[in-house]
Length: 124
Image (cartoon, rainbow, N blue to C red):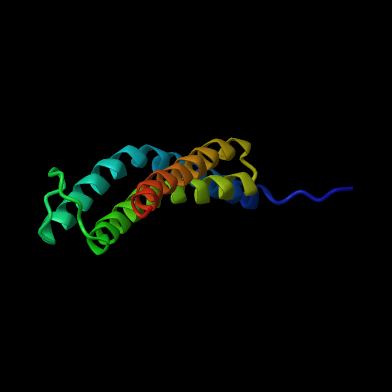
């Protein structure tokens, strides 16, 4: 004989799982917004340090790292949240939580890779 949780406890677990899934999808929806904010913030930081991002002038490594790191952190935040909440929803019993978790993981890894590769290629 198996013992199932009380209906009130099961309802609370279902609500927590649905909340995690909802937060995961909200995070996925925030990724394009974060892309725009990261571009504006990176350009703004570079211009604060005296370099015009639109010019052909190559900025020093310190400026590139400061502006780039801020941009990457802004970009990766919603992707990491999507992965976190998606995997949490999956662990709480909502199988569809895997979809936003995979989207967040793939987008986050791609964002990091696409931002680090130009820096590595410019150092050669």
